Length: 102
Image (cartoon, rainbow, N blue to C red):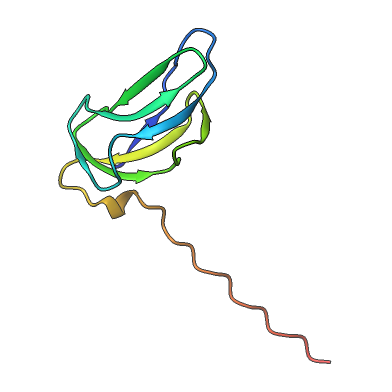
């Protein structure tokens, strides 16, 4: 089951930050507490650590994007799980309606 990586509370009066730099790439194996990403605010810069050991399955927010506290920015899968398990299921395209006959 995928683990969500979210922007934590960054300070008492800080509501948002910018993804400054990803320290790991999608598909990289990570250890628990290993820094994943740097978030930059007007007051502080902080590294967000991995909450668990696993593989960084998806990076959902690119560098340079401003995000609110609580926003999901990436997903992690546990060792032995497939990164494909965290990918959203593809929804089939709706079938084209038949053209009306005059």
